[in-house]
Length: 144
Image (cartoon, rainbow, N blue to C red):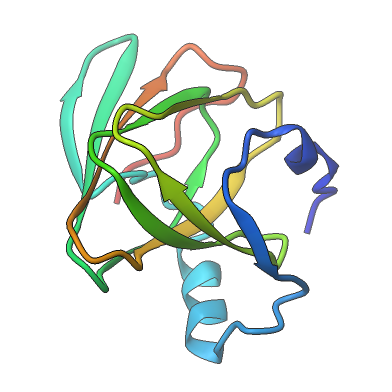
């Protein structure tokens, strides 16, 4: 694996609840290997042009979106309030509470990335809009 020091500069949200792959079951480690270059950063691609990809993630309580890799500059906005659990490729696990309208921006230099999953651990539906900038330092990943 590459040096992950750039992860400390990303605006990762939430409370750190585990490190060093401590709570990761084998099936999750396998999923991260199988999806290590999966550029589908949302459950539905809403729009794409020569500048951006606009994605939606819509998760029912208990539902999760598989591991996926961010290499493009992007931002997400929480459409509604909710809670998630996220596993990140550095072995950390975070639990995050979102407010409706909360937005975070991410920037990646050449070769930098974020590989993670997301699971809805709240009581209601969790919805995000994610916008990727195609003119980033890294080339877009192919979509599966």
